Every structure is written in C-alpha cells, then in structure tokens.
Image 1 (cartoon, rainbow, N blue to C red):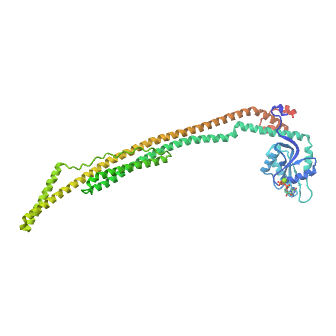
Image 2 (tube, rainbow, N blue to C red):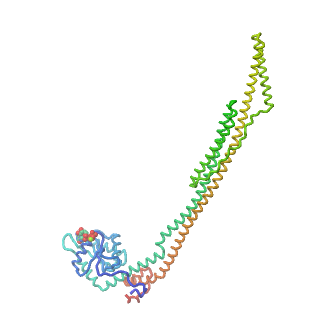
Image 3 (cartoon, protein in one colour):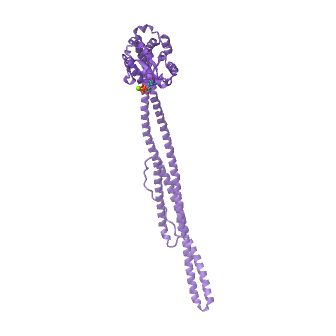
Length: 485
Ligand SMILES: Nc1nc2c(ncn2[C@@H]2O[C@H](COP(=O)(O)OP(=O)(O)OP(=O)(O)O)[C@@H](O)[C@H]2O)c(=O)[nH]1
Ligand SMILES: [Mg+2]
C-alpha cells in the first residue's frame, strides 16, 4: 500500500499476530486478569508481554492498571512501549472491588493518557475486578468491549496503519538525528576539546621548561660563584694565620702547604660544580651533562724571600749597633762591679753583644719573611678566586648550552607527536563533517517522501484536520491516495 508513495516502503516491519496482549505495571493484576479473560473468551488468545517478540504486533493491548492510584509517568512509558504497533488499546482499571473511588481513578487515568498523545484520546477505559476478595469477578464491560472491537473489520486496518506510523516516525527520527549529526556531536565535542588541550598543553610545557631551565642556570651561576668565593676567603684567612705563626723551620714547607691547599680547593669547587649541575639537570628531567676534564690549579708562582741588599745591610748595621751598645753596657757593668775582671767583662760583653746582634738580625729576617708570605698568600688567593670564578662561569655556560639543545630536541619530538595526534583528530573531525553532510543529503532526499507517507497514514488514522496539527503544516493533499490502503 505504501509502495505507491515510495517503492522502498514495502512493509511496516512488524509481524501482526492475532493475540491480545494484557500488560501493565508491577502488581497491577495482569496475571489474574489474563486468567479470567482466558476463561471468558476461550476463542481469543491472551498473552503477557514476555510471550511476545520485539517485532510482534498484537491485535489489541489491554493495559491493566490498579485502581489504587492514577497513572504515573513510568506507567505511560510502559504503554508507549507496549502499544507502539497496535492501534486498539483498552484501558482496564483493576481491583475495583477494593477501591471504591475507582471511577475517579479511571477518569484521572483517561485524562492523563489523553494529554500524553492524540492517539490515546479515544482509548476506551473500563473497570474490572478479576480476582476480587469478595463476590464475583466483574469483567463484563471489558469482555463486551473486546468482543465488539476485535470483530470490527476496521481494527486490523487501523492496527496496520499504526504500525506504519511507528515505523515511519522511527525512520524520520533516525534520518533527522543522522542529518543533524546529533549522535556524532558528543564525539566531535570531545575531539575538539582534546585538540585544544593538546595545543594548550604544548604551549604551556614549552614555556614552563624554558623558564625552569633559565632559573636553574641562574641559580647555579649564583650559588657556585658564591661557593667558590667562600672557599677562597676561608682558605686565605687560614693560610694567613699560618703565615703569621710561621716558625723559622716551617718557612721552607709553607709553599708546598699552600700549593696543596690550592689544589684541594680547586678539586672541591670542581666537584661542587659537577654535583650542582647534575642535580639541576635531574630537576629538569634531563640527562646529566658531561663532565669536562679538570683544570690544573692556577699558576701561583713562588714567594720572594730573598731580601734586598740595602735592607740586609741596614739590618746588619742596626743589629751590630745594637749588639755593640749592649756589649759596651755589659762590659762597663762588669768592670764596675768587679774591677779585676776587665778582660773577662770585655769578653762577656762581646759575647752577649754578638748573640743579641745575631738574634735581632734573625728575628728581623723572620718577620720580613712572614710579611712576604702573607702578601704572597693574598696574591695566590686572588688568582685562585679569579680562576675559579671563570671556571664556574664557563662550566655553567657549557651546561646551559647542552641542556638548551637537549630541551629543544625533546621539544621537537613532542611537537611531532602532538602534530601527529592533531592531524589524526583533524582527519576524524573532517570525516565526521563529511558523514554528517552525507547523512543530511540522504535526509533531505528521503524525508519528503517519508513525511508524505506519514501524512497519509495519519490522515487515515486521525482525519485530515488532525494531521495538520500533528505535522505542523507539513501536510500535503493525499486524499487521492486513500484508496491504496
Ligand atoms: N481485591 C482484588 N485483588 C486483586 C484483583 N486482581 C488481582 N488482585 C491481587 O493483586 C495482587 C497481584 O495480582 P497479580 O494478578 O499477580 O498481578 P500481576 O500484575 O500479574 O503481578 P506481577 O506479575 O507480580 O506484577 C495479588 O495479590 C492478587 O490477589 C482484584 O480484582 N481484586
Ligand atoms: Mg503476573
């Protein structure tokens, strides 16, 4: 019949069965009602919902609801499901023996259902008591309605039209959602979001890394220079203290001691630099930078201890003068005290004077050497400090270069991965767009025919006026097709 409108519309896609489906919500009295109906109408087949397949369309649906309360939303949804392919629906309010106000409930049920959809406006409602606690079952009205309606030749035709309506509505809905891409919308939104996240994540990661590299390098430069300076300062004061307390014998070993300390400080600072830079690289999750060959300690020269001639001469003369003075004083003291011992006094004075001269000259020499060594230590430490600061600067610079290029390489790899992922997402988005456009094309091609067919069906079911309202102006003149049904 629909083939006239579209050759593809060959069947409503359901299997019409000559059975009456008795269905209802939980504990509504379905089983009791079915048992009673089977007794009263033995020629009819009554089934419960679980005895029907999804594509089976019963000839009639008896929708049993208890008289205890009016229909709820879930009850109505159940009826929508049960009555999709069947036009003949009879509402049965059960257990009317137990609920005196069942007529009010029935009226409420009728109103609720009529509000739900136009197709429910003409549903007949009856009250039943299939298994009353007292008295006889009351099923006459329901039996009467079923007898009358099931023999009506128009019922089969209307059932078939109803099945068509359901199928056409489903098809139209499917084409519409496909054409609008509604089912793809969630996926498309998710894809767009992922794409944005990737782009933003890349940007963020890049700037974060650059910033943390810069701060690590600056920190390293500052802390290591500070460390090197500190070491130099403390070793300098240590050595200057040693120089100030130097004994005559310790003088020769002092230079070696200074050299050893300088070498130790160089090693210490070098190790400090290596450890700090390794930690900085670890902080940036980069491999430890290579450690360059250690530098030799700076050239610190030798202390100049050979005194100048003039100074020596002056010291000698002053020392001799002092010695002579002391000698004369001792001699006079001796000869004054013991006049007979002039010769001995002379000898003793000479000895004391000589000893004092030697001592003064010696002390003077030691003090001069201490001062010279102190100056030397100072020079050595200045040179060492300069060398270490330069070392810190050059090593930090080398590491900065190495880490920057390492970071750039890593960045390139990540960028490539992100670009691949974005390309994949873009391809999928394009595919969705193409699919949606294609589905919209199919929808635009198919929809007019399907709507025309639906109009035809609805006109048959509700009359032309109703169809106008149903379709919101989509109706076309189809009266000439009526004969095809
Ligand atoms: N008073 C009274 N009770 C009834 C009537 N019909 C059924 N009942 C009671 O309602 C309860 C449920 O009856 P069922 O026929 O098993 O209802 P159902 O809808 O098949 O129940 P489920 O299959 O469990 O959902 C039982 O306790 C019945 O005795 C009736 O007409 N009057
Ligand atoms: Mg049951």
